[in-house]
Image 1 (cartoon, protein in one colour):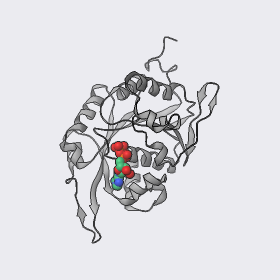
Image 2 (cartoon, rainbow, N blue to C red; image 1 turned 90 degrees about the vertical axis):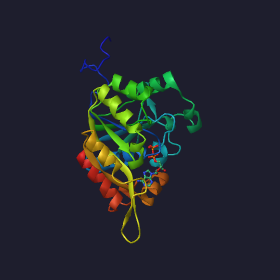
Image 3 (cartoon, rainbow, N blue to C red; image 1 turned 135 degrees about the vertical axis):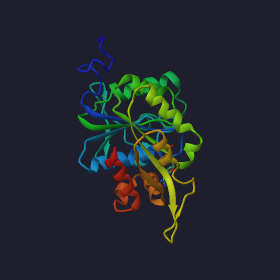
Length: 258
Ligand code: ADP
């Protein structure tokens, strides 16, 4: 049909999805995937129907963070069926090819892979579909916002990343593309020492101050925490493995602000 733009509401892809959320960052390694995963699970724990797309084609981490090592999505009537774990519907390039192969995907192939994740996957009715984007402002981000109406973006930064100004570029891109910015999460805010004092390893309140200066809602601070790292590596994110921990509470609080 000629109606392949999102202005054509009845024909557009993902019309069964109420909210499309992009989780984005300026650079890699700030904990964007960790936030996307814990956000998705927190939403599901509140009773929402949630899907998660691993759009970080160069370095997919959803399979590891969900502890999915060799399951492959089924194909029914030419559509991929998302995998499901912890109540979340999941799709990742990591389920389809060897992770090393995913690393060499580039440019046009990446754009078409994202389109396939949108059009060729049998997404059910969902309250939230969360995109774990690659870091920065590349083709994948552009393809996403041009293909579907993104409800809003959640920006993840460390206090230090802000000083490097990469995160401003991501914010500016979404603004230029008229995607609302739902808010900013400051990850790796501080480390709590055994005596209870906080060590602001990457600087103090960098994310919070940046959010204020940019008139972006501040969704909360996530501490540096071994349980967060271990939860990701072991395939059981902290909001499930240690739901009462300070970190899990920080994630669920941030989720409520979205
Ligand atoms: P990104 O998606 O931004 O590249 P990841 O979510 O993959 O970053 O996180 C990078 C690494 O840092 C992972 O090993 C993850 O477990 C770890 N990590 C992320 N956030 C925290 C945190 N708050 N405390 C401890 N480790 C964290």
